[in-house]
Image 1 (cartoon, rainbow, N blue to C red):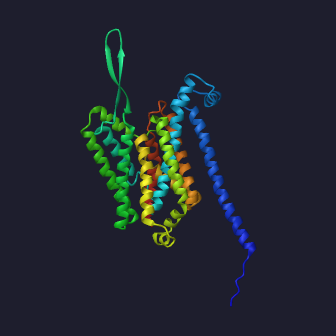
Image 2 (image 1 turned 90 degrees about the horizontal axis):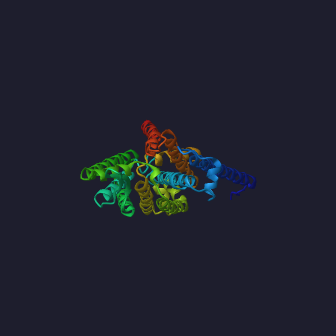
Image 3 (image 1 turned 30 degrees about the vertical axis):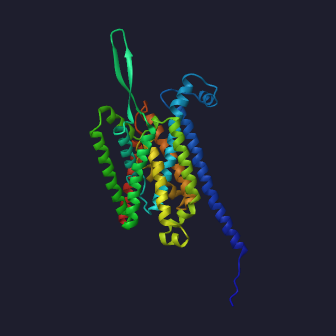
Length: 371
């Protein structure tokens, strides 16, 4: 009978190596967090209205009054927090979708989920009358004139619900095709392109029957822009994103099993179909919220997980938090750059994220074709 020997020294070395491995990833996350906080402080200061560090600190501690408080709390802080929350949400969405569909090109934008949410929002704005514009009246000594003011959403809840239904429709279609037809990774992307075209065509059709004000409201709402967010919308996005993040962190071992293959996951007791369907619905929810509140922000859900995977590997215990914080950092960088490049802050942040993400998308396609 063969005697089995153990090597306590070797076991201790492996334990120390594992602890060092996880410690490095924790340090990296802390570094990203410090960069995010530093960039947020810089973003509060950057803009056409010059603020000193002392004035910002006084405003943050409630000691400032007047224009400084308005600029900090009503203009800059909402868009900074919206960029952080939306970037976190999109980074999470991309990382989870790429695992659930086993497709490195998966993201809410490339699979048509964001476009589905945009179609739902456009439907609510035009057909249900949830969008419009404020009318402003100007009185002078000669005459009284009326003008169209800022675009507004009269019923944000109907817009959000319709955006969610549009995103769910796209998600269910993708999951169904991936499950029933056993589609390859490239075929799933082509299905996403087809869905995107379908939803974009539907949005154009809705606009065709809309009034000029409603068309302007739809176009305004589909631009990816964090500058129009308010505290209520940020709270809704933050609460939903936090809950979904906690759920997927609790399911991180199931995601690792799914990444190893469906057969491996089933052998470990994972309900593959149920986990995939529920996961896609949760991703659709938070992607719909971001699109309904901030518009379509392209490619960020593709870019952040790939950067995170390069840095920390495919273990979802580390990939999920790193993808989230990288998404926040990238979106805040893009928004801050848009405000400094265009002083009025009118450049949509979705334009810059497209410039960042489109080259990566093409690179992944070329690399996949070569393999």
